[in-house]
Length: 357
Image 1: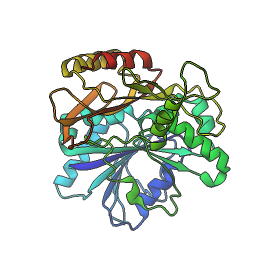
Image 2 (image 1 turned 60 degrees about the vertical axis):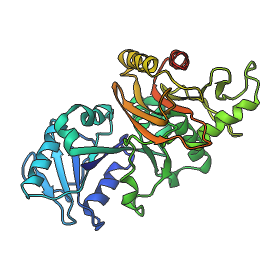
Image 3 (image 1 turned 60 degrees about the horizontal axis):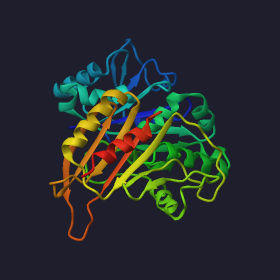
């Protein structure tokens, strides 16, 4: 199956610079780039000379650029048909969303449409964040928060234009919103393009990518008495019931408080889930709050199963599979991360607790 990378980020975050690299550099990869014509940051006309309103342009480096106006499913189907006919060649696809777009519906395409699902494999959502303007954009535009929340990897651009303190605070804020996405400061003038490919962000596997500092913050909070308020937020862990949710941590630095709509929390426990109860609960949560849930992913300890059960989803689309066996001496445990807009954290955590054996 052909891997697909969704590229998102707000206006001015650097998507055009990256796409120019992909479409012109001699990197040896055969990549099809799907560019939405309504994007505010279109590829320069001197790079794409287009005679017709819609067409597929072959680049000198073996890449392809497909400019679409309408349905993404149709564009993917057309690309595949032309490849099958021997007219074009490509080994992977990059889809650029517009700077003002929520990437959720694009990701859902790969779950909903059978033809797309049989031909293409969604590899990852890459979100670009402008270090200079990103903090203000996060304050003013919820779509920027959603782009961050959907990300499998976060690329911070234009870091040379800000102070180390500003960069540090931005990284902290992004980790608070999406702890499962590794962050990387990038300069697309020198970066290796292969770092955006084969991330396997949408593969169901037994490795749950959560920012290590995020979990370290949760562990650190165990040393505090949670009956008292602190000047900075800590993770709050219920040792009797095994639930643990993180709502930001100071790490010894001063951070401005941001009341972002997009937040994340983690549930961890060493108790086993009752499979039937968990299935019913997650089904009801997705039915009621699915549109608010951007991304969720977990490695689960299930009663009666000697292997990890892994799951993840986008909005109401959820998939699960059986992973590797728990090793001798290893304590089976559960780690789940939820990222969404104004989620009822307490309801979800308490509901998960009631699903434990």
